[in-house]
Image 1: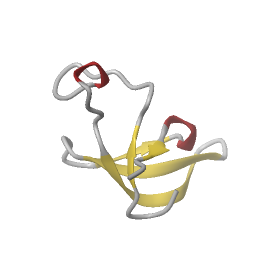
Image 2 (image 1 turned 90 degrees about the vertical axis):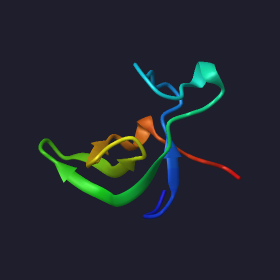
Image 3 (image 1 turned 45 degrees about the vertical axis):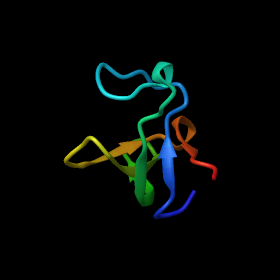
Length: 67
């Protein structure tokens, strides 16, 4: 995973908008990699398309969109 990759959460659930059950995944773009959180937790910065900020997600929760 690198900055600029499009990612999604394959196990994510959403209260609104496109969902996996609709045949679509919510997609975000990676803005930061290897961000250190307290406790030596590595996170990935993701700007989700329906958001107004960057969220920091565990890398194990994300998959790169394959084309």
